[in-house]
Each structure stands twice: as structure tokens, then as C-alpha cells.
Image (cartoon, rainbow, N blue to C red; front, side, top):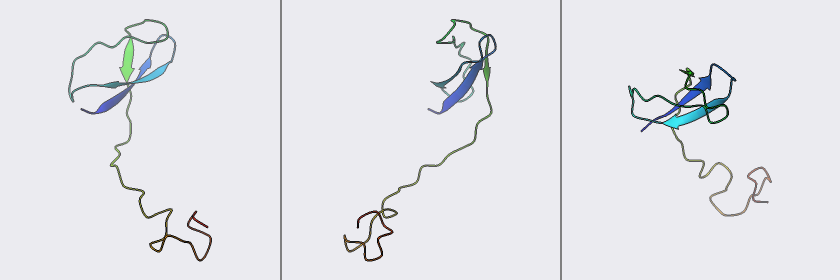
Length: 69
């Protein structure tokens, strides 16, 4: 299930809710209790592995730029 971001029209608090795509759930603001919430447009993200970015294949970093010096 995707995560959607909402903003409370009463107090401006932003929060995220896990819901089915196209769901008709009525959400309530965690901060003020208002049910006047607006779904916000947010960017789509695809997860990527960071493995290998901060490490050298040999286990030691000869240049000192891999974070394993």
C-alpha cells in the first residue's frame, strides 16, 4: 500500500497515511482533531540499494573517499 501525505486545512499540520490507492478514507489531524484534511501532491520514489556506494570491493579504501579509510 502506498503512503499519502495530507495537510490539515485548519492548523496546517502535515502527516502521512498508509492507504489503498484510490481509497476514500476520512483522516483526522493528529494535532488538532480536524477531519478537514487535503491530500498533497508528492513525488514518486523508487527504492535503490546504497550498497557499494560507501564501500570498496576490497574492503579497504585506497583513496580515502569511500568512507572506509
